[in-house]
Structures are given as structure tokens and as C-alpha cells.
Length: 140
Image 1 (cartoon, rainbow, N blue to C red):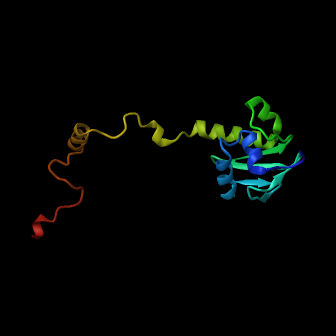
Image 2: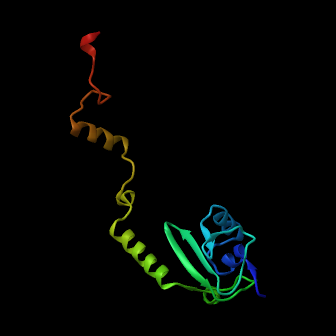
Image 3: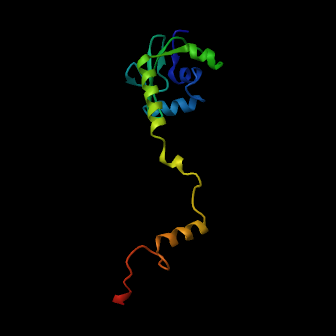
């Protein structure tokens, strides 16, 4: 076997759980082979460079082998070799995520209950007002 469809290779190399997910990502333009956008039927061969954009990080690998079957992860990892630049970029992205976590992840209790909302309203001093806008009762 000298060539294999890119969607099947991505599935066999365990980058995607199903071939249809791989096809969707290829159709969205998130996968490139040798610097060119591809279609799912594009064939790859040993030595091609595949770039995939996932979760905001571009991962670049060199195809080292082809397989028709999806096997265990240690076998799948032998089908490619990640470039040093790609490894460094992934580590930088992981460090950025660690230093600047998602603000919504800091919310511990979620949405306030009715009682919590009343307590918040009393603390703000709004009293009986149902809106933060200025009342125009004097004009009526």
C-alpha cells in the first residue's frame, strides 16, 4: 500500500474517533496536506506533511506509515511523527491555558437561587424597585 485517503489515515492514526468526524474537519478547511487545503478523498503517502487545527492549536505531523485498520494507540503513534515546532506550539498553548483559565470555570455555585437573588437585591439597596432605570413617576 503506497497511498491512503486522508480521512481514513486520520482515523487510523487516532486523530479523530470516526471517519465522518475527520471528513467534517477536512471539509471545514482545518486539515492541510503539504500546505494545501484538501478534500477527504485526497490520498497521502509516506513523507507527506499533515497540518490539523484543533482547539485553536495547529498540530503538524509527518506521515511515517500507512494502515488500513485502526489499531491500538501505541501502534497508531508509529504512523506519524510530530514536528518539533508543533510540539513547542502545543506546549505554549497548554501553558497559556494554564495561566489564563476560562473565566466561567471559576463559578462554583452557578446561577443564584431565588433567596440568593433577594439577598443580592437588598445588598445593592434597590429596595422595591424592579428595574435599575430611573423612575418617571413625577411626569405622570
